[in-house]
Length: 307
Image (cartoon, rainbow, N blue to C red):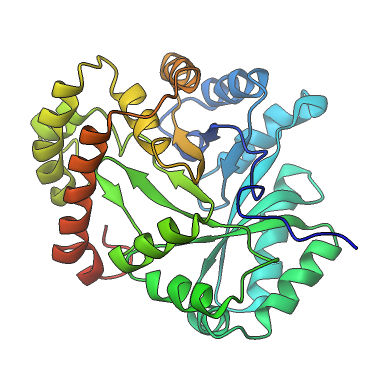
């Protein structure tokens, strides 16, 4: 009989850094430059994270993939759906433009009926099983936001995802932790596998703090004010290294997903990947205290998609 993997075994094959393709969909950047960036990342032999919602990123990737099919990376694909029918459709919506038959890891971004079904252990798990059997998605992780943390919390407490959904994925960086305090505590207690999104929180902490408009939202600028002194006390020169080491300071974090359209920035990610010892405990603890406060003060009260 095949044994059930332990939490330590789940997602253990993920590389510590995964290339995020958000910026490949930016039509302000010449198309050929974005294709070349995709080639650079493909040459590194790492996994990609993508979505049909990222502008025309899939078109860029298809162009790169068609020129080097032997080097097509393993893919994490964001699957946004409110019903099982939508889930199946969105898988095709991503696979067909890329010329692939299935994806390695489906990132479940659930809403409406499907989220409710997930929280109560409903029929959606049978639908996930069928998708796996058909080879459309090999494995699943659940995407978590502050406004959906209760869905993950209820499902985990019920034991419903076990054997079907291998972990959770959410923004986790020095400025953001998009799991509620209650969910985060449970994930820590159970050593649930985590994939950390948005590695550098949108840019260098000093730029987010000091340059008007650099932060996507005002709350990020305010958080940068609090985190910048911690970064400075760490003695590290690279914000990218600081962020990657922060994510990997938590044993259950399997990978962090960072996006860029610049080969130079990509090289920074790779350099940081090769130096992933955890940050000093006092640095991590100081940031985590901020996370707990920010979650109570702001995150759990946020309207969906406002952060």
